[in-house]
Amino acid sequence: MPLAGSLDIRSLLQDAPTMTLSDRELHLDDVDILQVLYEIGFTDLESLIPPALNPTIPPVVTFLAYRARESVFGPFSLVQLRVSARAGVRPRAFLVSAFCDNPALAEVLSTSWGYRIHPGAMQLRRFHDRVECTVVVDRRPILEVALVDPQPITGHDVQYPPGMHLARVEDAHGARPRLVQVDTEYEFRRADRGRPELRTFDPAAWGNGRLVPTEPISASFAACTVDIAAVRYVCNPDIPASEGTEKVGSSS
Amino acid sequence: MEFGIFMELSVPRPWTPESERQVYANALEQVRLADELGFDYVWAVEHHFLEEYSHCSAPDLFLTACAMQTSRIRIGHGVVPCVPQYQSPIRVAERAAVLDILSGGRLELGTGRSATWTELGGFRADPDETKKTWDEYVRVIPKMWMQERFSWEGRAFSMPERAVLPKPIQKPHPPMWVAVTSPGTEIDAADRGLGCLGLQPGGFSESEKKVNSYRSRIENCDPVGAFVNNKVHTVNFLSCAEDGDHARRCGLKVASMFSYMASQLLSAKEVLPTHSYPSAGLLPALRRESGSPGDAAKSFKGVTMGTPDDVASAIRQWEAVGFDGINFIHQFMEVVPQRYVLDSMRLFAEEVMPQFKVAPKKQPLVAGVR
Image (cartoon, rainbow over all chains, first blue to last red; front, side):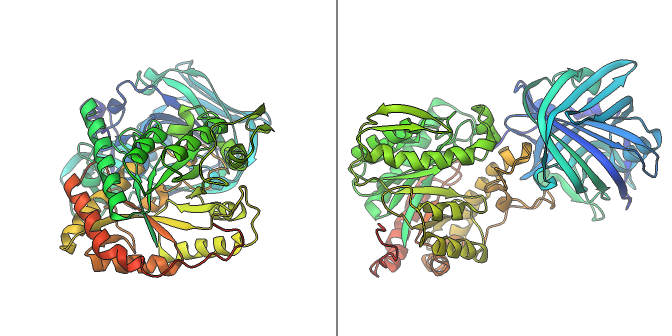
């Protein structure tokens, strides 16, 4: 059988977001997205994700940055750090943490989709020769990442697997630890790809000092409409997703 | 119809010297039996770094052992990745020729280009280039076999005039195939006069479309070699027993484990935005992207599992679609006992195979076709 995650979720649960399941959806127009992928070291790869998930070989870390000049919450930037994984036979990305510069949006993402989210200052800037993203916390850069030499592609070529967010999900039985599957639809207006470049990354500031990027893989930029769907599935983080997945709304 | 067995050589953890040796020993025993029973082909994949899924990184060596322990079955060396970072086309031509000699002229060469980032990234190969390098490899390899001396100035590689030795026994050269998983590769196969080695389990209608477009296209092909190989094979899971329920349970164990392990691989398409890999290879057939992770892997229509009658009925459907052959996966991660695998092969050979071997083979339509 493939390797399975062994991340100790008890420690993560102490500051995991608390959320409730609802029909809430979120539509975001005119979002710029930068995605940069790096391989990370194999050491303790199982310990990077919860037992419900399987690691990919090799393990991959994803920097996923959104910027919108307008939204119902006003302008925002959101940067996520994700680790590639599998839930059963399906590709997923485990959210390590995220930073957002719009407190109102951050609150909604946290309470409705289980985003582990922190305040930070960030920029996503697009030039003709590069697209770059910086995240600054307490005046210290914790991420400087870029796509270099953008070349047009089709949006069909870009993939963003659904996120798996560790949260305490409140229901009639109390608050239960769950991995929340976050499904997002994208409608692309344009897309580019290019060479990934990572200048600064402080993994400890993102919540896991062992996430050390080793090999660059790819970088893409997209301008699109984003629709975050209402949560349809949650999963017991302690047992394989193939056994522990629950459909939202069905008895558990 | 022709029938083959398809070897991934998957090794479940924990890995020990004994576990890898046992998987290879079991596979060789299956190959010997397949030879005795009248199976037409044994295919061995070439994969690198695919933990548990496939420990078959030196298939030419494994197939040499197969060749030395058999007398009749054809030796399918494929799919050989035609990617310079993996190996030069010179080495592919040389090793294949040696295998053809040692097998007494039984070699079939399957070509391809890898579909996983695990492999391509491991060799630091550029996924954007693999379709182009494959195209160059399949053009030069038959020339290396047929010409006394050969020289080349190309995109993927170049060489001054040298004799690429030895030469294969089969003249003008061994049959060549291409693995077909990405949409459109069947057209590439047809245009180049290559056999179509289907590696994607799928439905009848989708398969029929592919076979029909291949058949119509190959009639006007420009073959890369000295002859056209116009065979179209597909892949399936074989589990055959008198107790149909037992056969299906065993077969689904193999199919489910195969699907599960294949889905763990990191496809090139998944991590790299590229036109070069329009699909994730065989993975989309094995998972539904938007569904629940809790959904069990399902078997597909036309799966060759059950009683001999069930299996024969499924094969007739594939035959009607237009396939010339089926290569069977009958074991994966050693999830069914070796004895069951051998019994399933025996029963298949005894009761199913003769139903498809009676009629003389239809003569190919294309002039010069082998």
